[in-house]
Amino acid sequence: MINIPITSGLVRGALELEGTEHGLLPHRLPARARAQFPDAYLAAVEAQPSGVRLAFRTRATTVELDVLPTKVIHPGFPEPEDGIYDLLVDGHLTGRGTATITGQPVREKTARFTGQPTPEKTVRFTGLPDREKDVEIWLPLREITELVALRADAPLVATSGRGRRVWLHHGSSISHGSAADSPSTTWPALAAARAGVELINLGLGGNALLDPFTARAMRETPADLISVKIGINLVNHDLMRLRAFGPAVHGFLDTIREGSHPSTPLLVISPILCPFLEDTPGPITPHFDGGRLKFRSVATPQDTKDGRLTLTVIRDELTRIVANRNDPNLHYLDGRTLYGEADYAELPLPDELHPDSAGHRRIGERFAAQAFGSHGPFTGTDG
Image (cartoon, rainbow, N blue to C red):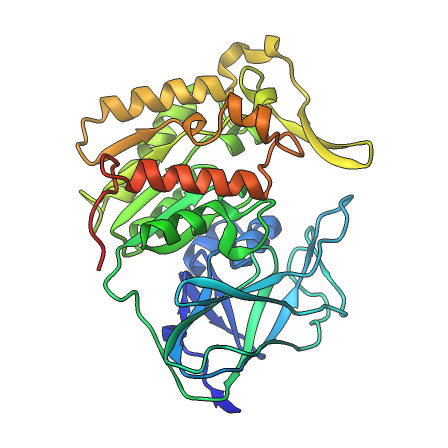
């Protein structure tokens, strides 16, 4: 086995790599953004490497990756299962692995992640085809993962995007991956694979909140295509009223448009169907129904006075905002065309908020067709 230095050229989908005493920690928000809101929960979700992968070309038949994984425990919730690593060969899912964790988990509400480091674990993939091939190792979407060492039984070279367009996407926990089977089967990953584009996934569970530091991070990230999924987290947190929502959306889009993105195709996506929030504001709360985790609002439909936001209100406002900006490269997509009433009847949301793996597949397929199809805002030929 050959020891391969882990360099930035091998890692795709991260905005920053932090050097640690053990190796490299991928971040999906840069240090400047993290410093502006030093919140433990945001720190956890941005460091969960949804969409981050190692990409290289090699003849190797065996590849080993040493990692230091950290689970994030949400108070009152069951401990999550071990994270899944997906191995793709020439774009096809070929294997899956886990790094079993036996150390002390880090708890979400600590001011800093000061729990004992988990022991180093090795994720090992064997039986790869004995030929030159493109290999990707997708990191777990809900498990903070420090990259410690990489080995293979043949040399490897980092691969670039090979001329493919870069798609930068920001959204909530559904974009982050929620209940997807694995990191390469979240709806953004599936849509990117179908469209043949390079994904940078800034889906941040619970944190699609029109934060200016997120908009600045997107502004400063090279990309050929940009999308923002806006709405569900604002209702979930009951974060703002209608008076603040419109200007905040305009400000978020204005910031993205600054710098190198004045005419980049930009798609605004409204929330998918969520029946209990369509005409009822948040905030929401978790509860257990028959032992299963579910979510519900603590408000009622009568609580919409004073400009409290519902999904219906947000869709109406986003439609108006996009139309009024008079930007030929700005587009709107109603999230209910990705997952609507008929889909809810066939593939109900298990916790009333997040789609399951079948829901992710459907959303990914529909987004690829609507955004990247012949009449979509992202249509084009990729190298």
